[in-house]
Image (tube, rainbow, N blue to C red):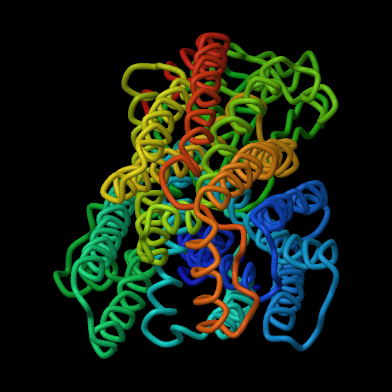
Length: 621
């Protein structure tokens, strides 16, 4: 704790971001449902609609994060993470005990177990995202891109580990899913802590863009590495020893990505020591010498009644969490945060006529100046829910993320219906595409906002359009199109989860961000349940009955083979051909078109807000 208060490099906002990245790299395991969904279906004798209900329950588990978001401001971040790790381990360990035959819970209870497990991930995600947004106020989209890219890579990372060390033991994979994220989150929770920095520091700290660029480059490199691995396995039989090499190299790259953020500062210090010079990158704790200015009015002299050196008292104030302005005429003391003074105080005190003799708090006057501050009004949670923008963003998330989840949850059955057994490859491809989508959406929307002032919600419409093309590609019903469709759906789905947190913080503020983030995020599972269980699953079962009526002998033979090979009941509810999912994918494409229109409406309604944001942030970009 002492090191954290002194700003030690082991406990700063960069080490917090690095720890959050590793946690997020274990936080997207819900997207690997396709790896073990067929195993559940065969072991527990589920039909497609039962399996879709289980998948929907998994997605609804994210709603448990709403509770974590509400109480985030009441407890330390490490406690939120600890609760999430406990929920994750309990839920997935119960799923493992079920599939391994140790317990036999009813269907509704199994749905509850998997929901609790995924809900734990949501608690961890709430702490990591909220803390990072506080720490990187002017780089929200970029920071979200870095974090959410790790969520996108999570599926590919764990699938690589499964194929290298565990395949074909699906039960062992579920046990890995239960233990690895929980242990990792508990070990790294101590690093997750708010370290907010002000605009003055962000404007002069040239290392920020450098660190983010290096991290983006390393993440893209890891994504391309995994993509090459996936494509190699798709076209060639790869030996187990080579798969182990892929997995070990992947883990090394993952830790290098996080290490870039942490070791950048010590490397700068080492370079200074070695060269005897001073690094060009100004570190935040070094920025204690304040800019010089000419005092315009005599009232400013009352801010330092001791008559000492001008800068020394200001240095002392800079090191404290609160700054005091004392008016010697009436002995009143005014208090403000050092971040506010950094942002507006010193320059404004030099430029504006401030009358301290009339009991006017100069800092309050500055806070009320909308031209100097880009802050939005602080709404209560209830006030926010009543706004039209809230509901527009909720439905955009429901249609877009819901369609993406519906495709991801059913991809094992989609590939099987078209005669492909490469489920793990498609899961890996979706995860890698999701990573790139999150990176591009996060960084690209930040650049677009700073350079042009176009509202960030416009990117949601673009993501919906790409999702539409992806669903239509899958509706074509050929194996080569599966690769293209998986990439398009994965990329656009990932973009939603980079854009949504940044938009929530910009449109509604950070006051109730954690609760709003989880509340709006819960719309994705709602959409997934309706689209997956009630549309995709229902249409699949209808087509399966039609297929069995046309091919009774083929269906019976396929059932007998599966019964013999798996030692289980097999799957009588099978469907082969593009008709199985063709209609449902077309329906999802139509839903995405509606979502694109709603995203455009939200962009139009927030255009003035983002134009003001560009005006405020351009100087420090």
